[in-house]
Image (cartoon, rainbow, N blue to C red):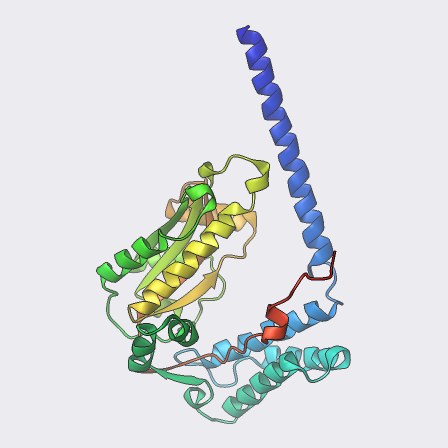
Length: 309
């Protein structure tokens, strides 16, 4: 009887392995066919390339000390992308966002201060709006790349973590974690493999790593759930920090599996922790600027499925 049970258990395990493999092959195929990985000829893919390159220029202008003449290669690439986008989609909001980024970068190359070319903000303005109604909190939150010196109050980090823990998760399994780093040497190790913090990451008083413990998931259908739960947790965490008057900047974790494994080994993260993103955290200066970040119009965000059956 025990042998039969072991055989059945082994058979179930082999089936789960096989189902998992098929699911991941399906994911790989769907991503390759649907994304711009193999071809960026679709209008939406070309628009995304414009927004990505434009953000490189806008982000550069929002750094504490952008170097003169920065982004010449990105500006030339954006000009080509804008021509292609205009031919396909005309002068829509994406085209305008790209043109605006080119104009601001050109002004900076001619000697205009970057602080007059980015969106101005003040700590007092942010803190007042963040403690108001929810639309004001959402409307005033921006990615901050200019931090004031000084440590972030530990109590603020704890409170943000407590509030983030209230985020919804699948079946209330609450697998999301936040690993907070304030030691300068450890912070440097954490940022070493992240591509996107250059020019400001070393000025952040703290860096948070948002992860999800994958041991809380049990089926092939839950293979993406870590990033769903982790994203919900991360957004609450950002709003909680913002509500307390702190500045944050999301740092993507778009890396290869090899880099992910190297990162975990270098800082001592368990292999079963799925890294969702990093967050740079710091005090807000009294006066600072942020990148111009236009958003999609409501017509592109809110859709309806009525009549599509």
